[in-house]
Amino acid sequence: MHYRQIYLPVIVLCSGLIWLSSCRPNNSAENKNAQAEVAVQDANAIVSETIGHFKTQTYSSTVNISKVYKSGLRYDDVLRIHSKLDGQDHVRVLMIVKPQAERKGSGVLAEIRNRELGSAHRLIPESKRVVAMSPKQNYANVVIGGLSLQDFQMVQGVSPFSEMRVVRREEVNAKLCDELEVVFSDQSQYQRGQLYTTVDGRLPVLLRAFNKEGVLIKEITFDKLEQVGNAWVVKQLTAVEKSFDYTSTFNFEDIQLNTPIDDSIFTVEFLQKGWQDAPDKGRRF
Image 1 (cartoon, rainbow, N blue to C red):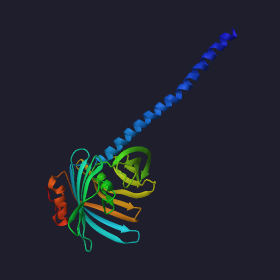
Image 2: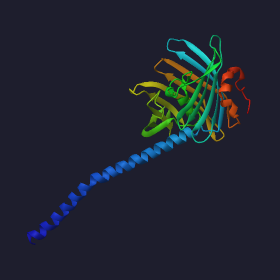
Image 3: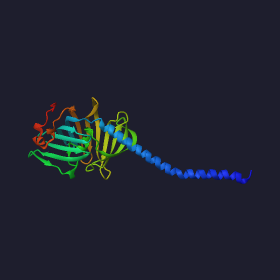
Image 4: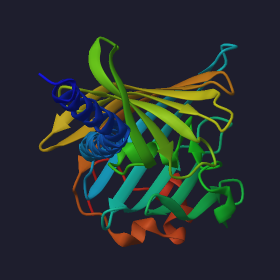
């Protein structure tokens, strides 16, 4: 066989391999982009399912709050919370804190629309005045016993996150969970977080929140969850506030779902009445 007959096929084969090699990085990049897009879609679906367990048209409960500082100092509060969901991401919330001993209680009325704080009013119990809060304050100053309105959004079935990504799968509190890296829609308190949700059932187990410097400032543990019909409710939460060294335990009682609540409840006039005229336990509107 002539040497040309031997080497010609070899040259053709090598040329083909070189061409395939030159194409591989582009295919790899395309595959990575496709995988990233699928991962984002999966993360959105996971968060939607996890938070969606708590979504109801109306929600009412009495919350017993115990706040214990690292020094041993303790405060107990009783909170009534009422919320109404109008549309996908439009929530109105009324919170009234019961006066106790030297503490005069307080109250907050807020409207959350499209994951942003649309308006908020705070009751000043000493003067029975209601003060409008500046939109620039956002969620930062709307905190009850260690949980902010942004935290309560999850209890009400509305996601406070704008971005999310699946990171890994690991066991947390004896439950197999997916860890998701999340970015908060409003960053006046937190910038990003870690959400752990069970693989079996998609129920939240733990949320860690970090500030812009990446410092852990709060941990929220979902201690007890209970299914009521097609929805789930939080029965107990523990919030560890790292910045101020205290731990708050929230016990939710007298929970009512999807019972009519009149719109007059979510008004400045009703907030101004304070605890005495807040809706009684079990009362329906």
